[in-house]
Length: 127
Image 1 (spheres, rainbow, N blue to C red):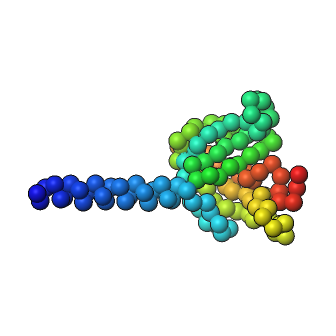
Image 2: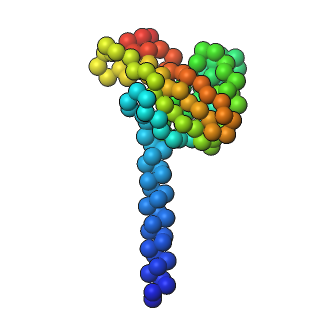
Image 3: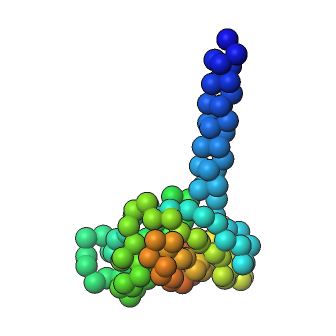
C-alpha cells in the first residue's frame, strides 16, 4: 500500500510539472523586455505555398512573426526547436482592439541564431 501511494504521488507531481510547462508555453510576453520560453510550431513563407514571399514562423505559445524578406535564420528553424521570445516594442495610439505591430526578438536555442520581427504584416491601424 505504501509503495502504491508513493507511485500515485510521484505521478501527480509529474502531471503537475507537465501542466506548468504547458501553461508556460502558452504565455506571450506582455511587457517590453520580458522574455518567455516556447517552441517553434511551424516555419513557412509569408504567403502560403509561395516561396520567396518572406518568412513566417509560428510558436507553441500562439505567437507569430512575419517578414516580407526571406530570413535564413527563421528558415533554418525546425518545428520543436526551443526558443526564447522577448517583447521589444509595443506600438502606441492603436485603435481599440487592434493589437498588431508588436515586435519580438527570438533566439533559437538549437541554432543560436536570432531575429527581430513584428507579429503581423501591418502595424496597428494599418491595412
